[in-house]
Length: 381
Image (cartoon, rainbow, N blue to C red):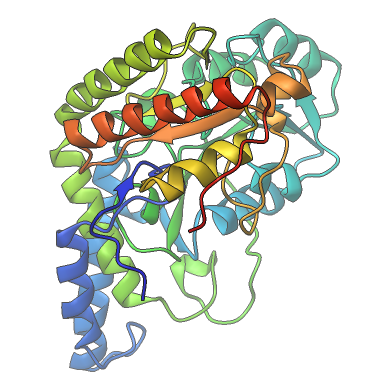
């Protein structure tokens, strides 16, 4: 087993550390025996755990518990939203998560600005000329740059054209205050493991009276929208993590201060450093940086050897480091995008984590400068 005590973890946008509240809720739920669909006392107890969690997740996004459909994660929720509404045409922003792009391969791509924000005028033009009824999918905050999208303005335009709006809020939930009613979206995607819950559980929040055809047939679970026995332990952990994240939302300002300090020190130490999406409002925890002259893959490996975990790209492709479609959509060339790394802080990140990253990243830049190329020799693991 690899010892992790000396590691600095700065890859929360891939998955956040499990919160103690979630761990405790899962442990308690694992002691249960009943199926939540059973009517005897064992089943009713399991159902209570599920419904308590439903209330907690609903509270996180200002929704009603009946609107929550538990899924196996954000990917399933995105697929359910895009495939279950049976829209005649689908429009997605060019910077959406792969699970959205893959769920609607024929979707019309909405361009974004160089800052990583959706082009609202382009959205208007595309909606005016598109087939109806339409579904527009725009994330609340980007997983690579942290850029926050103007969802209220998106909804204003979609409604004017009689379209529905889906919003992938996986990265934003627990990091931004969210109100389903104030956003005005018809469908909202959540995932537990981005906010300190367990992996393998998420939710689609469905506004009424949005029609939604299930992806999975079988039982009548989740009000007929998602068949299959509920994963009670994971759902309980999701609920506990959602409650903890909601209670700690004010701490995001402290996380933002750490992120800003990290960027300032990194840019001062390594001239020519680029911070992508800096011109747009961003999540407090996310930074996308490019070191001059050094490939992202090399940076990820070198920092890992120095005890600092970060990522390149979305970190959702079975460990592969590949070109970022997000940065390409923002107008970045392949060479520039190929140097970009993502540093994402979690609910437990501290000043020492920032210090260690800056120290390791600066040392790497010095070694690159001495070697004179982008393929510096790394020490053995």
